[in-house]
Amino acid sequence: METHYIETMIAQLSAPDSKHDASEQALISLRRILKAVEANSRSLARDTSLTPSQLVVLKELSQRGGAQPGELARAAGLKQATISILLDKLQARGLILRARGDADRRTVMVQITPEGRHTLAGAPDLLQAEFGSRFAHLPEWEQAYINAALVRLVSLLGAADIDASPVLDVGAVTDLPGAPGEPR
Image (cartoon, rainbow, N blue to C red):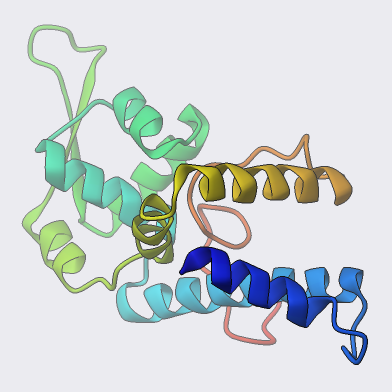
């Protein structure tokens, strides 16, 4: 079934009466992806005042019960400096608590608060969760094909050196998205 879908898409894109050439079609598809990510980020911000990265951190804490910042950073695919900023913002909103270790005062343990659990319960699913679920159901060859095409697209856009985490988000992972047309 998926093979038929791919063949149909290729036929449509290469049809002589197509109003867009191949590079324009690629840019249109890329723009659709960016718009979907931005719309999901805005929806999440509107509903919860959280960024996708903050929601990922809350979900990790909810599943683990508690964790050290370094563990959270690794689990969420974020840098240590980024996780510190995210935790500061979550703590300021009362969604998490940080406490020093009893045995070793240098260690910090992070826990989700009841308010954090309440916020998490009302949050919509992340676009990346939906993508991950659908992507996992694709055959291995198609997953490899998509990954190879995306790596090539990154190269074509000169974006190979841009640091990125596995969180579908727009802008800085610590900043809430603005309203449409609003400067960041």
